[in-house]
Image (cartoon, rainbow over all chains, first blue to last red):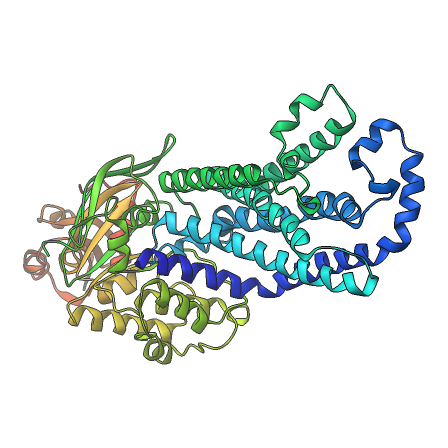
Length: 267
Length: 300
C-alpha cells in the first residue's frame, strides 16, 4: 500500500510539474485535428481528383473509397490519426522516459530523490504511470477539440470511432516512452535514450509506409507497431494489437525496473 | 543497536580505478564521526555505497543494523542524506520539494522543516532557481534533517555556507548528538571536523589511513618548540631526546618538533640560560597533512 502511495505521489508530482505542457500538446494536436475536420468538406473533392491521378499501388495506401468519395474517417485517418499523431506524440513520452533516470542523473537530482525510502522499481512504475496519464490527458483534449469542429464543419463523424482511433494510439506512444525509459536505465545519457527510441519510431513508420507500396518490404511490416494500428476510426478496433502492445509495454517496464535495480547511479 | 554504521572489507572499483578498498569501519550510535580525506580519496564513494546508490565490488555494510544492500529502503527511511553534489528543480520552491519528499516518506507534515529553515535563514517560498549556492546547500541540509532521522550522513555539508551559518549548522550537529542521534560527516575542511567530531577516519588513496578519536589524533600532533638562549648552544644534544625531530638552529634559537612530553627538553634547556620558550600546537590540518605527506610512512 505504501508502495502504491509512493507511486501515486511521484505521478501526481510529475503531472503537476508538467500540466501546462500537457495542455499545450493537447491544444496543438486537438487544434490540428479540428483544422483537418474543418478542411474536410473543401478537401474531399480535391483529394478525390488527387487520388485518381495516383498510381494504383499508391492508391492502395488509402483504401477503398465508398461511393468514389473519401470519407471523413479516411481523411482523418490518412492525414491525422495514422500519420501525424502517432509519429509526433510519442516524442512527448520519449523525452519523459529518457529524462526519468538518465536525465535525473545528468541533472544530479537522482541522488536526492533516492535518498528517500523509494524503491527504484517505484520510480520506474511512477514514470510509467505518469507517461500513461499524460498521454491520456493529451488524447482526451485532442478528442474534445477535434470533435468540437465536427458540427461546425457539418460532417458526420462518430465520437466513439474518433475516440477508438485515439485510444489505439495510446499504447503505441506508451511503448516508445517505455523504450526510452529502458534505454535511459542502460546508457545513462538522456540524449542517447531519446535518439535510440526516436530512431526505432521513425524506422517503424518508414517501414510501414514503404510496405504499403513495395511488395518486397511488405513481409517485414509485422515488426512495425504502425502496421498493427489498423483502422479503428473505420470501426475495426485492433484489440489484439492493443493488448499485445500493452504486453510489450509491461515487458519494457519490467526490463527497465530490472536494469535500473542492478546498476550504479552516478552524479 | 550495536553500531550505527559497520563496514567489512567494503570495496568499490570503477573498472581498474579504485573507489574505496577494503574499508573496515565502525561508527558508534550517538557519535559525530568525521570521514576526512582529499577530493577523490573515496569519501563520497563510501557514502554512496552506504545508501545503496553504488553497488560494492566486495565486502558489505550495515547501517543501523540493516544490510545496506538488501534493506536499502529501510535504511533510507532512517537516514538523512546530503549528497556532495546535487541538483534541484529550479521551478520548485524549497517548500514544494519538502512537501514532495514528506509525501514520499509517508509524513503528514513538514516535520522540523520550518524550524530548520528559520535557524539557517532559508526562505522556503523562493523558487530554487533564484537561490544562491549557499541557499541551495541549506535546502539540501533541511531535506536531510527535516524528518528527524536517527542517522545523518552528510557529504561535505558546509560547502558554500557562510561562516555564520556554518557555526549554526555545527551547533545543530552537536544538538543532534546530544539527542542521541548519529552523524557521519565527510569533509575536507578539518577545522569543522575538529570542532564537532568525536572520532575521525582519514582516507588516503582509497584506503583507510587512520581511525581515532579526534582527541587522540590531536594529542599525536607534533608540537613545535622554540628555545631562545642567551648564546649559541650545541643543538645536537636535543637530538638524543625521545620524540624530538626536525631540529633547526638559527643564531641563539633552537627550533624542534616534539611528539612526546616536554619535560626532558626543558631539563636539557635549563642547563643553559634560557631567554624564551614557545610551544605551538599545530591544527588538525597539519596532523592531516602529516598523513598525506608522501615522505611519512603510513600510520595504518
